[in-house]
Image 1 (cartoon, rainbow, N blue to C red):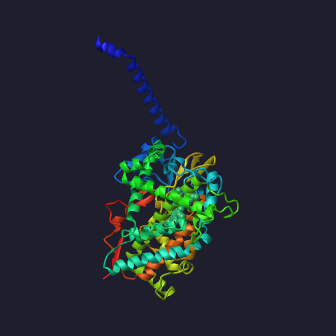
Image 2 (cartoon, rainbow, N blue to C red; image 1 turned 180 degrees about the vertical axis):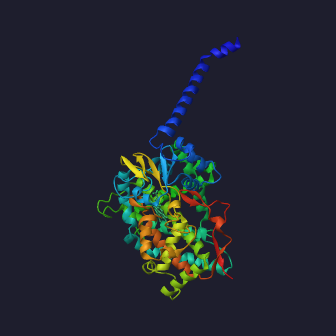
Length: 513
Ligand code: HEM
């Protein structure tokens, strides 16, 4: 009797029907995605063709976030075009880079599923609409032109001299110097001085502001969580400072940092509006708030300013600091390269001095080759930059790819292509010494700052910092050695930028005996 009741329960009938309907839906979806989808012909693993969780698995549920390495393995197995999710493909052939990254209203746009997770939808970096990007980019570009950036040279010189003095003091005391954090402190102090005329003084901190780096590293990992579960994004906006304090220390520090940015923006804007501004130099704000900054310049509102500033502070610190760290590591690990670089700098600047002018530095051929090779091997943004095809069809290596498909290429693969960079894992500045060959590589096969309309806006500033930072270090110190850091410590996780684990040794230098 009880069994009869059980079997005839309407709830059981409904739930069985729901389960059956879900099973039919999932099966049909899998069959469609794998065999009937417009990308069905594109090779790749079965699971990648049927579910987006193929990528999520590598980003979130693996020991390390190294999907960029998995993509490399897939290309080795399946060829130059690989399907990495139901509606996304990845390309390995460098010839495709300029088909994907160019200037124009029909150029592939940034993929919303990927970039919305950064929570910066109205900033030049985060916006996925080409039209909105054109407006946002026009607002910030004048502040980062080569001309505008050259006016900043004094700031870069002053901060670099400060770092050099800190290094000298520590070496005199017989202590190793933490250049992993030292270079990041340099970039953060430069960008905050440039932005607010008020730097974060990380170069004065005994640890070079390592807590700021720890906070960024801890929080950056959450980007992939928000990408996998986008419904969490609006919820994360509801977290207040007191709530964050209870939930997670890094989150609390991050919200404080964001609050501080907003307050600084409000103060600077008010001072400029009321004519009380006493800045020592023209900041990014002066540029952004000046309606005559450039033709057609639209002054951003406070919300837009906040997002732009926040992007600039986070994009401008870690990337350049990381490149300087890697360049210094590779030079010190190769005695012949170290000797050649120091010799070129000594010839150009016979006297030891505190400032080394940029216009002279950027003309030094060996230093330029060292910087290019360092940018190649530091992989500023190592993983793919996913773009959505905006034209009816695109063709990559013979495969027809319809409008709306997400297509990506990565610096990790581009910079290690053995046809363009033989012995790709070796640091060989000489590969850039022939001007014609170097130009060909730079024009077509090398894009550390991206390419096209979404190319890095901070590129001129980054070069200014790299030339002055690297030039000053190696003109001042010709007897450094790497301290307790080896090739195994170079392995990184991809959280849009390359990040090292807390357990890995950080790059330190000491005086050679
Ligand atoms: C060595 C240093 C740097 C490297 C390797 C680098 C690399 C890149 C790359 C690859 C992109 C394209 C990202 C994408 O398509 O999603 C990018 C964009 C961007 N970078 Fe940099 N960057 C560096 C320094 C800087 C600096 C110093 C700043 C700040 C002033 C900055 C601000 C930005 C911004 C705002 C964008 C977005 C541009 C847009 O979409 O219009 N970067 N960067």
